[in-house]
Image 1 (cartoon, rainbow, N blue to C red):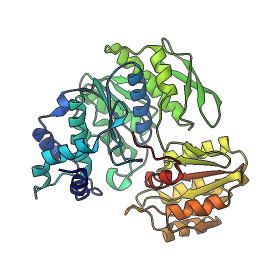
Image 2 (cartoon, one colour):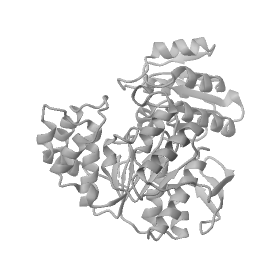
Image 3 (tube, rainbow, N blue to C red):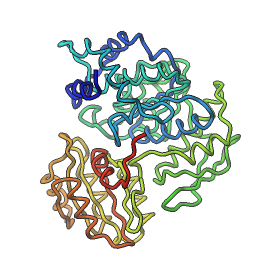
Image 4 (tube, one colour):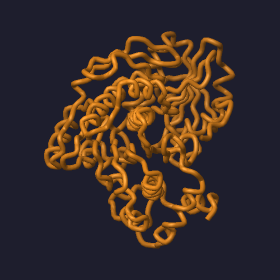
Length: 429
């Protein structure tokens, strides 16, 4: 099977609907001889920050000499970028080979697997074939019934709990927390970040029920002491960790992700992983995670940030004010998906900017432009409209002076379309 044929098969799978349950992923893993049993894993859930923590941990482990698999979602640069070993994406040939191997299951008319379930199975088979020492695996949605929850990890991480994917996970934080706590496993440390009280109550109960020891970040303190458009420097207060860290991930929200990562390093050391401080420092200095307060251009400056829900928008708002103190220099290109808290997100973001351009991505889930414009009008915001991300970029960039900063945000689908337009040279590992 050729890669183009495999992509046609994958593109025909359900991708917008979510089917809770592990029966379909287990059927796929049966065909692949259960590759998830061939490697150890770190399993990461959370409303925001999963990908950043996965990127940091992967980079540290790689610097320490380990062979590392990483599975994240969604893709941002290329369809294959969510599955990698030692930072190299899965090859087109390997994708095609795995699709051909599981084709009988995919052709089954009864309870067909979703695209995410198939990609999860392909990732696990790729990690087994690549003989990874440790795989860093991000939950797709929720946790309890997510396809990745077939793993038997050595560490589970919950970055945070906030309101997102409301139509699927519900609007109550307790319900969302219960879903995410479902990755807890007996005798496996469950590392939790900062949680709202109602979510913390559920996490404690679910960890007790699963007999998973709950670990917190209290032993590690992180303080931002310097920042510019290239990196942020943090002072670390913890035993046996570096005193300072340079991190090229610029968002202020990365401080908590860094704290979780460093605490995870401590826990991994306790189970036998050799992670010397020089590997921690070098790995974090070298980490890359596209689309998270990513500087694409300078003078004028263009920033891509995947703030796709209300908690992420609130975090971005702080960075907008910190990096660009004068409102007249702030420009926004914005598009959103329809399953988000649109009015609340727009209320936080729009007043911060002198100029706002509204658009929508090609995603079938994109919020229609007329509805977005209606919200902007109700907030009294002056705005322009663009029928596509490319048109929006052209329009917004036409107004920029050297000292201005354009923020492109609202959804990762926006970034997926904007980033290749802004890249001088395509990035293809």
